[in-house]
Image 1 (cartoon, rainbow, N blue to C red):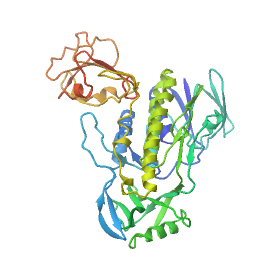
Image 2 (image 1 turned 60 degrees about the vertical axis):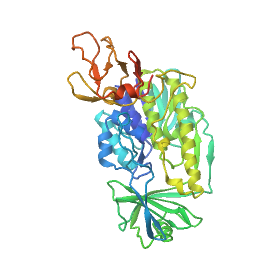
Image 3 (image 1 turned 30 degrees about the vertical axis):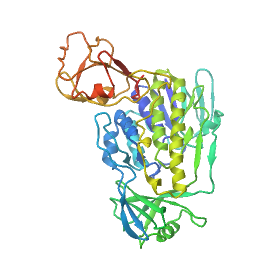
Image 4 (image 1 turned 45 degrees about the vertical axis):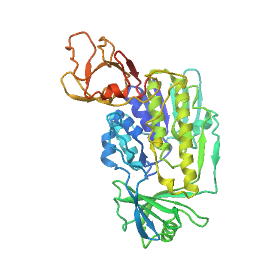
Length: 463
């Protein structure tokens, strides 16, 4: 099988990694002439960290990034306390990565490209899609280099202005508000403590002003402010906005910048024949809540195993479009708070973490219900070595867990999860590998009774 991916942002790169590790031939092309250099989507949510754990990039992400910094509030240039966008949580047996993580998008993309290269795939820049046709067996893509490429499937991960989406005639309904503009830019500010974020505002309107959050490993801050009618994206204009609220803080340079307008859209379909949409090509979000990039990564993670197995492809749209609709609601509500000048505009709750996503049938009942995220838990193997359920799930396979009973040998990636203190059958006993539920956390997380069995899909959800 061969898959062509248009777009080399986090969505396209995640899909490329997932396909390549499954032995699928994948080609990733991008019309850009150089790799993106900027922060853009710099917030990585807990569920996305779990995806990166499975894909083998989590160690690098944690090394290069940092937890969200506390925000120091400055009113009329004077310190007025500190606050956090999220309350940091301690890891739990079922949730090993409970907090968001901050890493500039260009840094994340470099990590994903390095992992992709380990799997033998490199991104082709300066190679844009200019047209496509498909029949019942293949997709024919016309590229800006003049070549024609035929693949079994094509995935459009080519952003909000997606040529792929337009080529397959999928509508992209939603709204764009041209009256509300937010400047986001990467800036250097040597006067500010880089270990903290900074919020500059007026006492009577604390939700307005300028927010500057540090970008780990770069010595820069992400600068965000609502633009007035005479403001633009120049360094001089940013300095002038900052001077309205700060006491002599200097901006000495800036890199990537954008003027963002509320643009909330959701594709009517995610699939047309052998062509699929993922990431911003399928849904665009307000930046509030840090959802766009994360939702795209999880689209790719949901699609990769289906393409490789060529099964359940229709469920990709059913499952992921419903998630995107919900996420659009969350991020739009946060945007409304911001636009209204509410003081809770910068607060984030667990609804943005991605840990409560479910694909369950709303009519389903029972203790173990298909469609929820499969929790982690500490266990130990027959030799007594510590293992996590996530270690058993890691990789391109599905995993079956049988609780409190020995499972017959023969089905790959099947494990018996025994109660604490239960004897472990010898390796030659004709049963599946056994792990012992160290402190009972696995049985609790899965609400499992003796003999219960669950199948965990390759994307970490109950089948």
